[in-house]
Length: 302
Image (cartoon, rainbow, N blue to C red; front, side, top):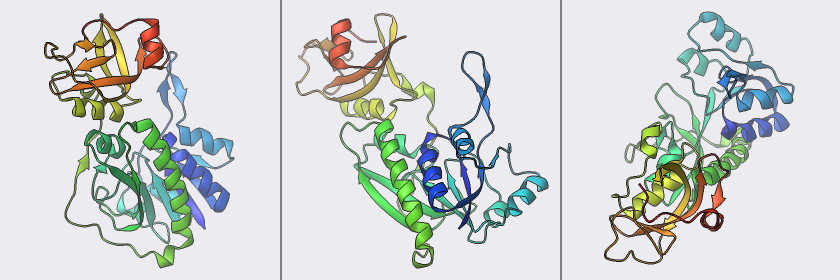
C-alpha cells in the first residue's frame, strides 16, 4: 500500500520501520525541529531522524491550516495514512484525503485513556492492564471506531519506560496485521461507557508528598519514570525516584511520613515504600543497592 506516516517521538519509530519494510511509505510527516541541548541548536524529532536515515521524504509543517499544505498532502495519493503520537490536530480534509482514511495507533484500551498521556495515566491510576487500539480516525479526540485491539498486563513495578517500549512494539506488529486484513477488520464503535481522559503530564505533579498513601506514591513514581521523574528532597538535593514498590515491612509506630526506616524504606501516611531505582543530581540512574553504597539515605526525605 501507499502509506503516509505521521509521528514524532521515539514511540513512533518502530512503527515507521515496520511500515517501511512492508509497504511503500510515500512521505513521513513529523513535528518541526526544535531547539535542544545547551547550544539550543535545532534538533529533528526521533521520527524525522530515522526517516531520513531510511531515505524517506520528510515533511514538517507547523499545522494544516493552509490550503497549500493540505493540497500537498492530497497530492501524495496515498491509500492510507498511519498516525502515531504525531502531536498535531488533523482537519477533516486531511482525514479524508487517503483512499482508506487515516488509522491511529493509540496506547490504551479505548475508550479508557483517550488523550495525551495514556501510558502514564494507566500506571498512575493502578490499572492492571492496558494495550493498543488501531482506530479509524475521525474529528473527535480518540473517538473513532476500533479495527483491532490487544491487551497487555501492567506489572506491579512496571514503569512508563518499560510499558512504552512494549506497547510500541505491539503497535508495529498490529498495524501490519491491520493493513493486511483491512477488509476483514470492520471498524467497531467504541463503547459509550468507561470513557476517561489522559491529560498531559504537568511537571508540578512530580514532587512527592509523603503524606499520600504508599500505593499512590508507588504508582506515581513508576508512572512518571523516566520523564519527568518523581522527585523528593534529599539533604537539600533533588533525588529523582525512578522505580518503587510497596515496602515488605511496616514502618515503626514512631515514623512520620517521609522518615527513612530500616535504612532503605520510606514511611508514608499509609505504609511504606521501597525505592528500587533512583538518580541523584548530576549522576546516572542507579539501583537502590548502588545508591545506598554511594551515600546512605538521611533519616528523613522532604
